Length: 157
Image (cartoon, rainbow, N blue to C red; front, side):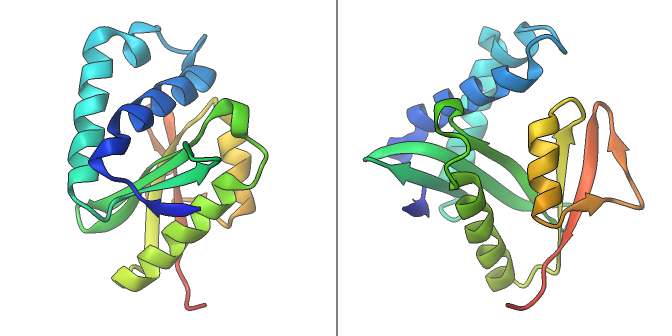
């Protein structure tokens, strides 16, 4: 089941985010940059703000537990997918695709015609996922630091 996150989901979402990030950042950037106390506090605060907006965070629930999360919002006038994570133990079960499909529906409803995201350049699994779902390199800004910038054209169903 895909639903909007509630404040009661905050701790679970923050923990899932931490666990997912460790799978692709570890060995590429210092651990403190993704799981140090200051970063974990910043991340939790960001998730709390996103959830408080009410329609910016979707969760995939399986067996009564949050097993995936996606967040999006306009950034400088451009709809942006800021996060999409599935719990590592739940990957390859279709939740990422379900979350992505729900995001596309929300973007259409919001009138977005193009969506942007940044994906860590060493995260080959995520890069392949986004390619399968129609994301392409942003021709105007293909890279931002150690992240690739991708775009998705949102078309009518």
